[in-house]
Length: 289
Image (cartoon, rainbow, N blue to C red; front, side):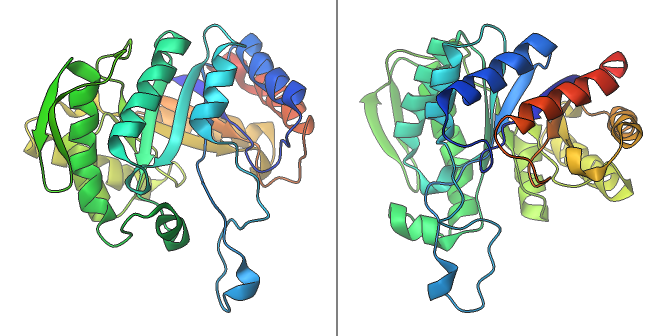
């Protein structure tokens, strides 16, 4: 099981030296990947009575692809994971170009996690349709893979039209792995049909086991090998003791997780305290990796 860290988007700040130190420390400690969340624009709750979002305009988010392009030059082995890019609010061909460029510049170290998001404010601001985002995302996956693996593409879909054109350079990975967020039935079916992996945003419990079994069933129904679909769990620093972290590591292994990420966000930490936290997690759990 590959163990990584969740980049503390909203809490690490904007000091470039701290951001670089965080990634380099993670790599030196032996963490295999760094995962970053995505939000493009935040709404102001003061002008939206009754709206209580998990993130607002007051929460800072480094743009994941730009962040990873910078960190690609500061590290050598660390895998970069978008967890997740809100794909339907972005132009697919542009995303294909940007992600291919990042894959080239990092030497093939990108794992591309996608989701459909929850925030209509972002879709409105980016000029995309919030209401059909799930359906569009599946066609987007097809377009991405075509553009990542062919010099020239002709595609005539419901939402995309490409006539004998392609991106250059192509990525190192052909195609770049596409992992999915989401946990409702439609998302799990989509994952089973076309996804390379899944980020379950729940603990390693019986509910999660049932959802993993459902994904594997949908994969078999689609004629796919269920074992080819990766699973990435999450362990929270704020849940308490090293003993609890070790218990979760063991539970994720038992569920068949291929990856797990350690998340220090929402634990009262700021800036360099996140670096100290991943050191503590490594010291307490590395023998179990």
